[in-house]
Structures are given as structure tokens and as C-alpha cells.
Image 1 (tube, rainbow, N blue to C red):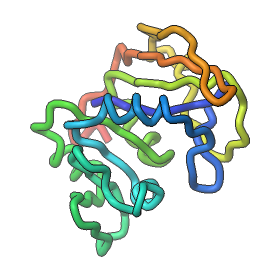
Image 2 (tube, rainbow, N blue to C red):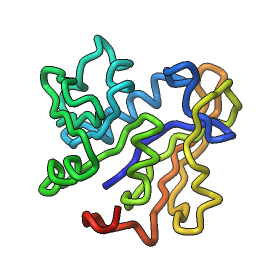
Image 3 (cartoon, helix red, strand yellow):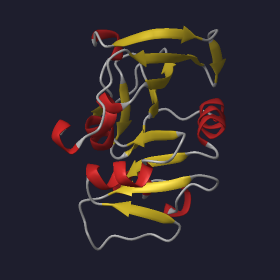
Image 4 (spheres, helix red, strand yellow):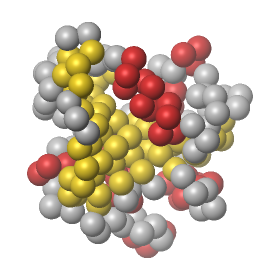
Length: 170
């Protein structure tokens, strides 16, 4: 399982329910990484997607505590148990947000694909600082790029001791 997210200098990811920094290059990177994969997304985050619809070209699993929530073209899971049952045979799985889904699943992820914006945006939602977590190791960094006056780089972190899912591990 992987996680993919864009963060600012303070690991901020959003403000008022929406992503705080959006540039075309990061959208393209996200698309290239996740196309053909399974994505796990929270209900509130999927409602922020274009047209409030699942992302095309991917298997969308929406984690929602609302048992009556449904959305055409997606599978709704009401628990982590259901998420892991649904993804048990999927080869490429990406956790794509929001904050609650990141919190619930980060420790099960092997790899984190981080777009790091070298700026600080107004944020009210944060991703955990992987640099401060001993089990996450920075394995690869891209060159630094610039778009719309924002410098950024792509980083790949590895979780050297990810949790393996069992119902008892929860």
C-alpha cells in the first residue's frame, strides 16, 4: 500500500476542505502514479473531486462511516476491515486522502510519494511529518522544479516497519 500527497513546508495539505496548493505538474504526477491503480479516499475528499465523482481510470474505494452513502462508479467501505478485504488482491493501492484516511492507514503503507512545496500555505489540515518519524526514511528526491512561482520536488519515502493488517493489529 502506498500513500500520495502534496505538502507545504509545514506538512500542511489543506484549508477549509480543499487542497491548499494546486499546480498542473502535481496533478499530472498524481495522475501518472495512480492511473490503473486502486485509490482509497474519504467521503469528504471525493466530494471535492471534479463533479464530485470517482476518479476515472482507477478503482475508487471510498471510506465512509455513513452506511447509506453510495456513489456510482465506486465501492464504499465503512471500516478499515472492509478496505483491506476490498484491496486484498489489488496489486497497486494508493491512499489519497483526506486527513482522517491518512491517519487511519499511513502506518500500513510501505511507500509515500510526497510532492513537497517549498513554501508555506495557510492550512488547517496537516499530514504527519515523515522526516520526524523514525520508521519513514527518505529514499529518493527529484530535482527542484518551479511552477507558478512555487518551487517543489518529488520525494519517495519508505516505511521500514509498516504494520501488516490483521484484525488483531487494529
